[in-house]
Image 1: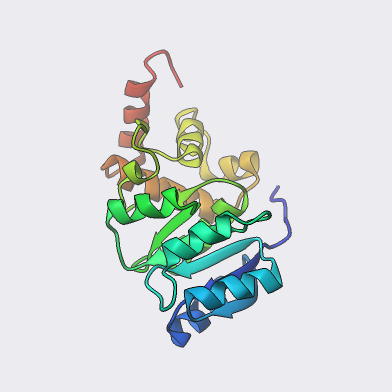
Image 2: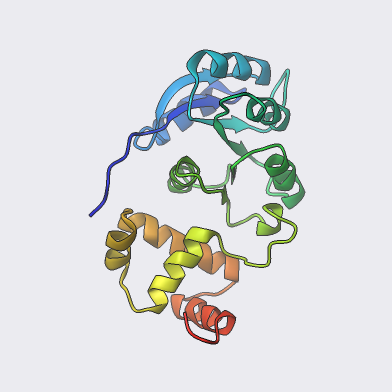
Length: 208
């Protein structure tokens, strides 16, 4: 059974009006847009007025860039979660974003499904980074190439559960399970789910 939770209230910031409109349209099924901004300074004002749960902001903007805006937003008493949306897939840029307090980093080459997944992931308190960006950006000491949710799903796959059974167990949509499976294979550099399970077995020789 899939549990329906309230959609997060969201502010979008980008200096291109077309991007603002497109993102708002693409994420309408998973979030309620309560404000938009076309530069970093305006973003701070809009957030102060609307008090959103989550912000999706471009990296390169006039007045204040996305990383500095994130740093200032996260320093507030009741800060929103922040997802950086950018053309840059550089791990160093992603690392700077996370160090500033971002919870998500999505490259603009991603499709709409990935952006929606990022919003859902960050909204439940987890971090998200596009598979095309090295996970080293999350934590220099991180040794696990998978996110917490990806490892959870791969572990359930290894026990023999189907995608439908996993979605019922985790109370998420089957398309989300399949998307996580696609991402984890990309992170591990394998072509099949069986290869991913074999990787997990090697990491957990006592069983999964």
